[in-house]
Length: 119
Image (cartoon, rainbow, N blue to C red; front, side, top):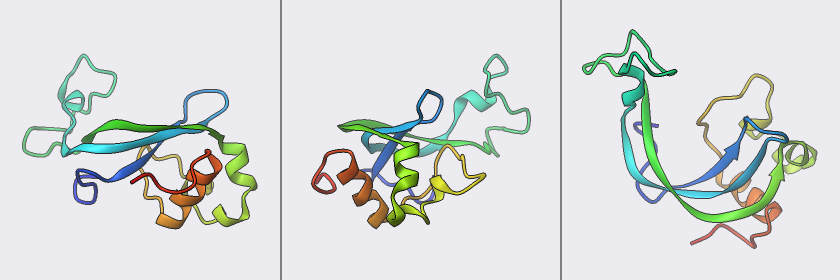
């Protein structure tokens, strides 16, 4: 995230902690990576005692909404053979942030009711 996400990059906004999990929309990076301050806050649920100002360990970006998609459920994504190599659909791949190849991004956009990637 720190090195590969830039202002203007589009991201799929995925709701993982709901029933059913789904891609809800597209957002845009509006602030590049910076240290996640919650990792250094001992009262935070995300506190990491190994994180320091010199070695933050956790990074974040700011995003802003671009467009809502018709909810593209995880179960529906799994049924699309064109997405079989998508990291999100592989066992054990439940990272908060993961790369989405451009061809997969476009397929998900179409599945969500967009004719292509928003410009």
